[in-house]
Length: 270
Image (cartoon, rainbow, N blue to C red; front, top):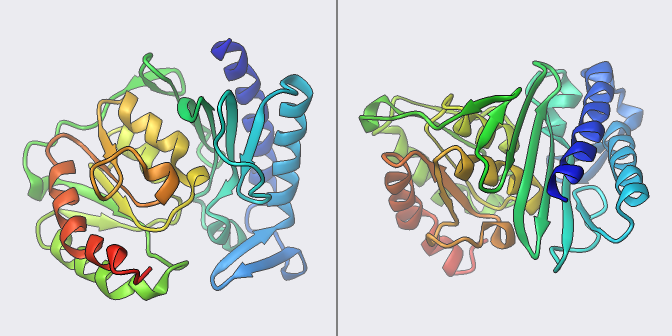
C-alpha cells in the first residue's frame, strides 16, 4: 500500500515542482498575500496545493489532508497527508533559489513516507519508514562528523515568534562559538533533507509547523540521524520545536537549546 501511495506522491510533487520552477521570481505583488508579519502566500502556493490535494482526493478519497495553506484537519488515525506546497515562499517571491515542495504521509499519526523536492536543482529526497533515505534514487546517510568544530549546522530565524528572539540569539551565540559555521537559507524542509544527505551536520529551529518538518524529520531518521523536540521527545510535529543532527552534533545542539530556549518556552514567552 505504501508504495502505491509513494507513486502518487512522486507524480504530484513533480507536477508542483514544474509549476514552481516556471514561476520562480516572477510573481508580481498583485499575487502575493500576507498571512501575518513576514509570512506570505502566493497564488502559486495555492495552485500547487490545489493540484496536490485534488489528486489525493481523487486517488485516495478516504485519506485525510493537513496542508499549510488551508490548515484543515490535523494528524489523525489512518492515513494523513502533510503538505507544504512551497516551503520557502519568501525565497520564491524574491527568486532566491532555495525552495521545496514537502509531502509526508503519516499512518496513525506517525510519518511513514517523506518526499522533499528541490525543483530548482532537480533533487528529490525521499524516505519510506524502515527502508532508508535516498536522493534521486541513491542511498544517502548523515555525515560522520568526528569533531564538533568541523560541523556545519543550519537554522531558521523565528519570524513568527519574535518574542523569543533574544533567547534564540543566545542559542545562536553558544552554538556559533563551537561549530565551523551556521547557515540560514529559508526552507526547513530542505535544511533537514541536507542533514540527511550529509551536507549539513545539524539543524534547530523554534515554532515550526508539522508540514515544515514531517518529511524532513523522517528523512533524517532514515539517513541515520537523530531528531527530537527541545525536550528530547518525539513531539516536534505537535509543538514545532525541532533539533536534529549526527550522533556527534545532536547532543550538543540539544544541550544548547535546552539551556537557551526551553526556559523561554516553559515561561510562556512564546
